[in-house]
Amino acid sequence: MNILTLLQAAQQPAGGGASFWIMILLLFAVMWLFMIRPQRKQQKELEKFRNELKKGDKVVTAGGIYGTVAEIQERSVLIKVDGEVKLRVDKNSIVRDYSTDAQAANDQAQQK
Figure: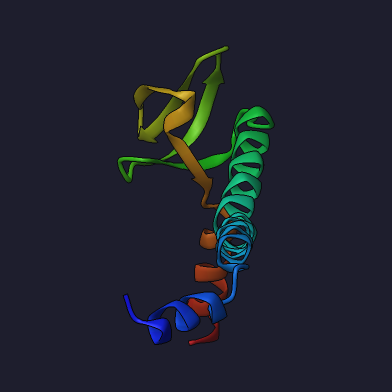
């Protein structure tokens, strides 16, 4: 071996391992801050919405079915779709309330 090679090896910084772990921790912190935390917040809001459902609420299912809540049970909801057509769906398949969307659409239609 050459003396030059030994000198170059001795001059390399020894802190490479610590900086690697710091970068990994920073990566996980950023992922938690921008991905996991907002998703948990959204899930909590959706769970709160489902628990606060009441008769007469206008809802949309995950399959895109619009209806009005007619009856609520522990794990399922009976929604009135059209006329006397009623569907029983799992409570977890209800994704949002469209009464505010319907109100906004009515406001826009009246402005035209």
